[in-house]
Length: 275
Ligand SMILES: [Zn+2]
Image (cartoon, rainbow, N blue to C red; front, top):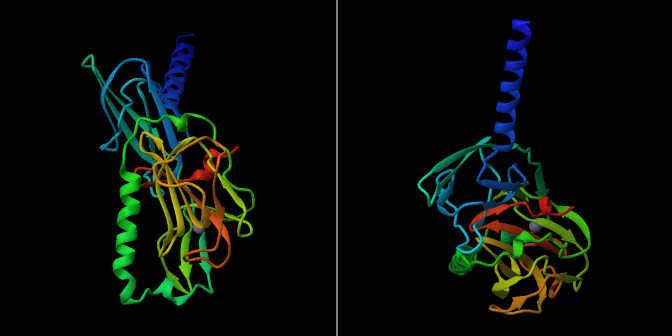
């Protein structure tokens, strides 16, 4: 009898530990999303938060709704720590288990050599492109568009996935961070969420026609290799609105949309948002 009680108590405690480790239960905060490399997490609190961080990186809190978002990068470690300090002086630490992924190696041949080893004359332009893109992703607004479910921005064949290691003409390059949707030039691209256009550039060196849309709390989406842009910086968009057309501009081997999801300058996997 006593043994049985001990065993059932041990099982009970173990199951509690398991639930805690997997879901990181809290009385005061809910986290929903994909606890995986590239995953986006949307959080909400029941009492006012003073500050929060994920692995010591600040997580901004919406001033009116206590809503927040963060994400796990391509190479996020298996354990992540979310810390919250509440305005009532209490603190909480949630230990999150992050699913680790395996990424494929993607060999792409036939890339124009000016995109694999760019000539000296364009290095300044490349640095400038990269600076304006980073700046567009770094801003914080209190939009909450990202709390809705996503509409796929274009129809077509999936021709590239998040995280794959890219080898262009035999030269290893940075990983691929988008979801590639291949379709013919001129295919419609629509806004997957409502949002505000932060950057609309018809001709960046690597990414060609490029759009970045802000959805609030550090969440932005990026659209590259576009042949035509139908919106400009500052435009406020409705979900489903026509924003651009698929193209083959910049470093590509054929027409496709490269769609990206970001939490500030951290790259997430947009495919995880789709059903
Ligand atoms: Zn791509």
